Image (cartoon, rainbow, N blue to C red):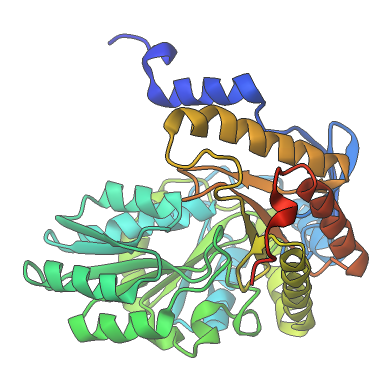
Length: 416
């Protein structure tokens, strides 16, 4: 079998072109505390993290992690199936299930594993399963669908319920085993799934719903997630999430019915054969969950700060959208790169790298996104419960400076 030839690989070629104009990704982090992150020793406001409740460095959470290390060690060195299932794993599973409104829970070593493994197994429940998914779902969900190898696949435009209905109508003519795959809160768009309409059309066609709520749990529904926000937890068949967002830790989970969970316990490789979630991470997630229960003001504050930031950026003329702590700022059409792949790979990447660098010079870090990671180029901002008015002002001032570098931007009318 020939070795991989980078010069013949389109992905490697694209990555090489990114490096030619300046790579805004894989920056080396040398420290982090609360809302401050260090890149090569330089402190910067982390305006693009997922630590929505500001818990990753909370003393109570870090203390719980230390205590778990003292009791269990740093690692499990075993799978849950054999010798890796701790009492605190069981406690976390039970408390999570109750929190999001389902009967049973399962904890995974990573959020990706909580999507890929269960989703593939659900598809394999029946040989003729059809999957209908939102086009903006996370990469781990796409991988789970591919691994499950459904007999029929359909996609619908982001949050377009009419297209969802059309897809369901099409696959329902071939099978009655249908699974709808969506996110509750979308990580790039910063918007919510049209869950009430999705549930209604799903029930009309007898379809099940798989909901990835990685960015919703801890933030919406008083912390219980997007399904709880809409009062629909009992109508969602499978809810997954991660501990690397609002929990400030790492790992993932699945919550569903007890009956379905029996199957996953016996037939889900990403849980059965992977080393169990580390004790420190498990204890940290348990502590974070307790803080979510006791301090709902954290999510309220994060949402308030995000709304304030959106309003301030719109006043500058930027297209800042979303309804969650995620605040995407669209750069579509600002650099003349629309639709041209070569310009996409060089001019657009070079421009967004320059923007990221300018923001960093003003002490602000934002996530740069380019196609195919997002439909259009954008800078993804997100705020946390640790933000205050001074942090918002710092971001707005940095974008005001950025605005001056964009030709013709000052003549545009502010976005509505």
